[in-house]
Length: 215
Image (cartoon, rainbow, N blue to C red; front, side, top):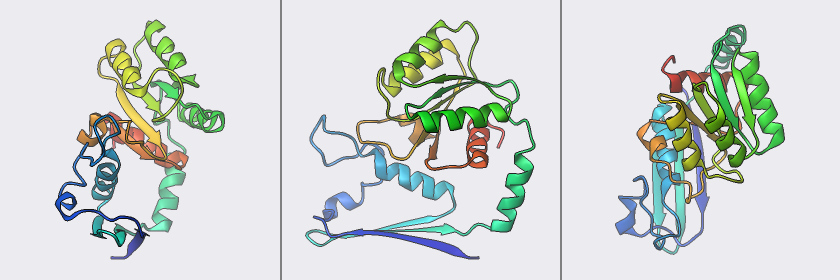
């Protein structure tokens, strides 16, 4: 088998020995109360583990930290065939999806991809629009496809409103990063899906399949 290695290193303050055993735990943080949680590394570990990869962290106080990630290499020819086949399917036929993305370029792209695959979408550019759309709609939604950071009503409240209006709704968070203040237990537990930006159309559809239980 072939593997791909990614190494990220810094020359910062390093990680204390007593913290090394806990840095991958959800919400563990050395920051002061109210200054954020430690969700970032635990999400990285979750993504690596689900991808069949391995994560190694080496650190020395006063010297720096090195993180090595090993992923199983993909067969590009197989991926090309999969992308061609998937683009011809109505994977999301009649699925009702709320798209929440404050970047207009990314939002329109996601929205058009979902519609091309058969979904009926409601596109919202901020949290206030999404909250209003969810609360005022008389029909249930199947999926909330959302960025992690946007203006207006915060993500945790959006998800709460969506779950009240549409019991059983699935959630897929699409983001390039998750700041410490965005603490969503559902991502760590697997209750909500997470897709790292950037992504292409087949990757988005596969992520949705996994979230709704069809992939």
